[in-house]
Image 1: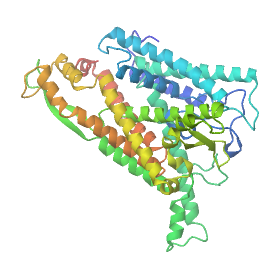
Image 2 (image 1 turned 30 degrees about the vertical axis):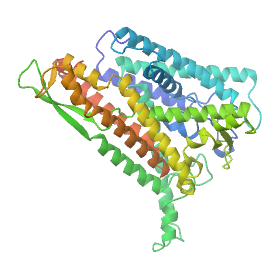
Image 3 (image 1 turned 90 degrees about the vertical axis):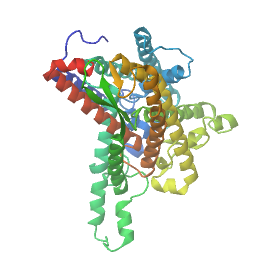
Image 4 (image 1 turned 30 degrees about the horizontal axis):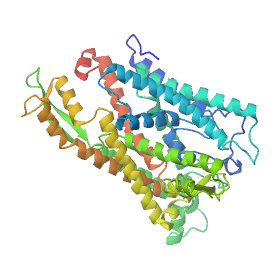
Length: 478
């Protein structure tokens, strides 16, 4: 898709962005033809993505079954290949950058086909032991591929300046917001036989019950914590706390005083945020864990159903049916066991019952976030050398230092490597801790949503200013 050859106005961009969101929401409510729509615990269908659907902006049994998973996975593969120098890409070269972007889109289509086939081979659409017919499987894979291509095109449309931001960010934020709202005030549970799903409604139902004792610790414990995977007030309060912490930490930054060499008297600040790489590490870490879980189920179902092979039981691992009756496969050993969030098995009580596993999971998740943070800084042109060159090329200089790449790079080296590693550690700890306490939308989803909302706020403000005052575009570098 080509970028617009004319100036797209603020209102028109807003319309295209809203249209992309509406198309996605319609697809998320359109069931795949050829399989029955899941209806909670009576489905009998295993879910390869399970609790990771919030991150992948996907909905079980609908056209967005795969969500943004293929796009994120394709980007993850190419970033790792580029960061490890297995594929040499010069991101300062427009041709190389264009080729890299094109390769990412093509690989996303192939990943859509691969994941769709893996769903079929892994028995994701087998109901009560009966698999779809060959014709049904063909129709399912065609629908998944077409829907995947539509999502890729919607994402590209927004990134090509027809709309605001990117489709990936927009769809993630919409999915997380929907999950938080439903877990907070949803009146009906789609996955349990309880009358109330929403934490707030369940809380008031508990305290207004005839047997509730205001002076009893047990009564308050039952009202605040429901157990299992049901949303409760503990998760609701954790969600609010995590939002507050992330918003506060997101504002922490080091500001380096800079001046504009062409205009005397112009001074400004070059900010280096604590979350220097934003939400990129947590997206890739969640995608990595999701694919370990996804591929692990596929290998287990096809080649190690009895868990008799030691090496396949070690990597990726062994699985068993969830006791909830949902058909969900949960890991019991191997790599998949330690990269599957323990709270998904039974809420906060599962974390307390096996703190060693929870600690290992958190440690691996934090290490993955740090790895992807460091890799993204190098691959994404955010390292000290590249940023110093960008400052010089834009006519900026650090006050008190000569306008040269070496001293500016030395100044940036004091902060960028530190905030990259420290930010990756903090992001990983927040995401894991929030998940352990049952935060709505998952800790990773909250981190992503805060960053996405801030990103969209900045984009909308900038677009509005440049539309009112066109002369500001040159100052903002547009």
